[in-house]
Image (tube, rainbow, N blue to C red; front, side, top):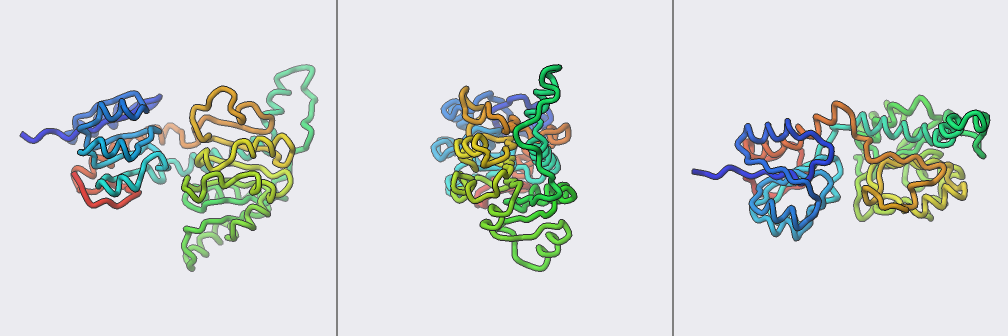
Length: 332
């Protein structure tokens, strides 16, 4: 009798995995659910797994090499920087993400963050509730008028383009940079319809009164936003990051906000989550911080679980997952 393939969830957090577990079991998987991001615990309890279903746990080369039956790492996120892709390729392990599942949510959250910073919600929600003494207080600097400002978008994938679509009516101009987007007539027409002027990174950082990041974390983008980058931005610019925390140098952002070089920052991600007490971005006037929830809605709460499990089912039944980010040759 052929043993059932094994699928292991590494961590649960607050996610309801019931539908994913049911889908996997319906297709013959033995399903185990752990509650850990610890590498040694994952390896110990998933040594015989063909499928690893991951939230935010790191999947290193050492882990991949310690799980010889592993054929798929199915992520519950768009980003995949927590997996050693090179090691996965070398060992015939597919890696999948959930592309497009939260495009609307993340773009909307980016817009909400930039509006919260621009309209100084952190200051005025405090002053409004400290009645009557602070009701008429005003922040040191008045909010900008967005229709006179330029929105710059770094990364013109699905989310960056969706942000351009919903934010364009608010801004005087929208410009964007993406070295991976093809230079062709179709791209030009698409960006024209969105009202986005494509330009280089230097112009984006020099011209963007509001800068929103929508790129994956790679060696080229790690700490892209550092002190030098910020110094070349317009005085009083706003920074928004809903992608990956390590795209920015946190201390550079803190210093720039406190000095007034940046008007403020809206951030949904940090390099390490949850942050330790005393993290420099946790208590800074002008920084609006949310806990990596840009993707979250009642729709995506279900879709992330479904797409993650469906990748495992498709690998089992079709020999290839639905949304791979790499191209190994082995299959179940």
